[in-house]
Image 1 (cartoon, rainbow, N blue to C red):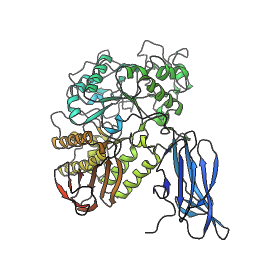
Image 2: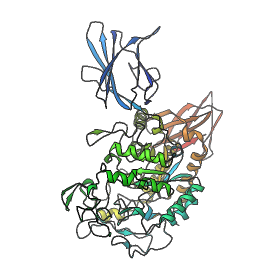
Image 3: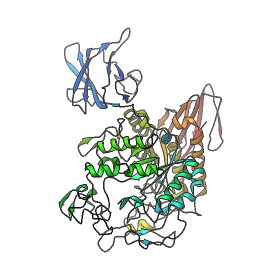
Image 4: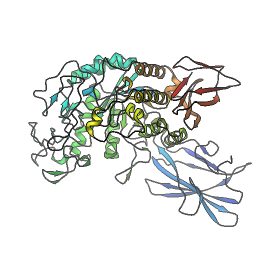
Length: 619
């Protein structure tokens, strides 16, 4: 195979690999055709708008051309390509799409980040467990009397949630099952058995909906969940088990039935929808007070806030008893920023600064669905991962690529997608990604895997009552276990959406948000997730080891995690036919940590045959 002219991921062509800290020297080496007589590196700096050029020099005593330049002193996103001079005097451009004419070269990306602020290591090392609080565990059937909103409580934990629109055509999410903080506290030993080290709670502040993404009062735990004392006790007991607690920060919008907007008059304070004299009036943007205002995606029950309003910034971030500060003091260790795309960079950066002031090792995660290193949101290039905002992001590119692979895609496409992220993200951010297969915003992973390629039933009622056939469930479980091997072995925090490990199924919201099936769990799945969690907790190579790809072809995927002489290899087959793989192994014997099966190394290599829909974790 011919050597490429330039490969940004090859140590022959670029050093160091990937993103670099500010001021770091970067050396590029290329191997153009013989008719090349030199050229220049062309750099475009995204945030300053500057374009710079640096001449290429012949490699001393060898072939090719090289150039070294220094990354800027401030965080930056650099786009670069090469302009080459031919010996006949003509010019040609070199970009990711090869040799081409002027203006046609696709540029490579160089991320430059500030490494002065350290990233806590605890998040990326361990397992995260996401809980939708109303549906995880209740200790008693709650009485909603006196609580915000016209709530309905299901007496039977196993009932179907309400899912049809009301007489106004709206789905209000006013039915509750009564999961609570005390219920979560009761199940902390169960989470510890799964190897969980971070507990991620969907919103817990007072709200009139079961999802609580329409905050009513940021200073108050929803009374159906408990009290601030309950929260602090939960955090204290979680910490005693080595479990951190992450809260969901919904700061782009509030509920219209909130203390701050108060459109329904539920609070005694004067809300923005009641008077222009309200202290909260500047928080919102009205086109026609009080009926027309900016809202999240046009949903009138979610009025959008103005995050640049000084009093709002003071309330959420800056004040001595701000929302960010007080809940860290109450026991939280991390914040996850809902819809981070819709929060200004300055707002996110200030949250991180205040978090560091309040609790040095606290962690800030952002909800971003794409490659966060070069994301454009509302026509603006974002700076989430340049060292001064989020520590890490929800890794939706991992989820999308893993799902594609598990549902019949090429393993090479998964490798390419993940190498793009690894190359673009600063190393601390790459190792701090929240990796997941299921979340509260997607249909249950088991349903997606088990029913593919069958279309979902056409009506909400059909989807509400749909349960997989035994054949679909069996296939879904096989693929979920295969995907879990990848999830737990990959850099970043492997994340479980509550109940995925117990065999929960369901289509889109609200069907993906059922109650945890206590007493009816899939014990086989639970044992597999517990074993993977134990391996993640005990093998340093899985926590912070270097990533090395071993095989990515067709339905076969294998990669190694290596740290200080410890090697762990994840190998999977997502297809319906056996897959053979051969790769290097450092010892005489490899053992599958999941089954105990052993493989003999011959001349430093092992050959394995993976059955369909299966995988191994070799140690």
